[in-house]
Image (cartoon, rainbow, N blue to C red; front, side, top):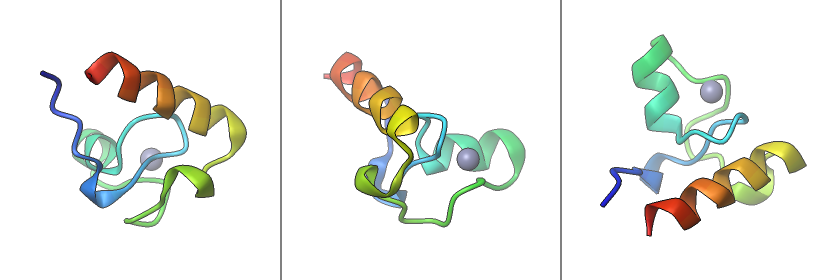
Length: 54
Ligand SMILES: [Zn+2]
């Protein structure tokens, strides 16, 4: 089971907001950014990660 914490939203590069915030101190997206708010490439990357996490 992967630890994808989607409760805080998503990053534009397909990571979760939490992952990028932990890696870089902050995320490039506002907290709570949803899949539909991401650019197409980011949304696709995020959906692929969700599939791999299940
Ligand atoms: Zn980010």
